[in-house]
Image (cartoon, rainbow, N blue to C red):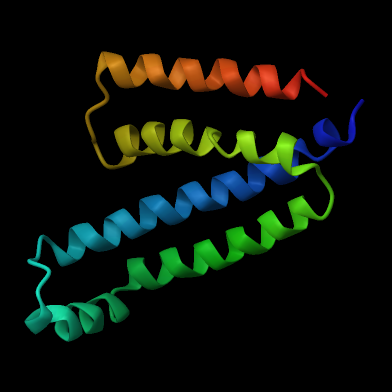
Length: 126
């Protein structure tokens, strides 16, 4: 068994943390709602973001995922580990569909399958 496969759970953990950060940040922005990005509302919007628990939680998850990713990179070749981060697209689309009730069309589903095939090939290439 190659070193990359041995650390697959660590890589998946980092990717799942990143996915969780995306979903939690999206939930935070849904709570804030649509806003125009102008010079006049930068400070009020930033203050609103800083007071939104989902935004703060998403930032925390990103920091935690960065720590898991750095741990991963200290143990695994980046040419193996980094392509596996594309699983984040798969996980995020699925969680977006089930948790946020986002639409996933046929083309998106096809793209998810292409990504999964690519990830499979990368894991078999070591």
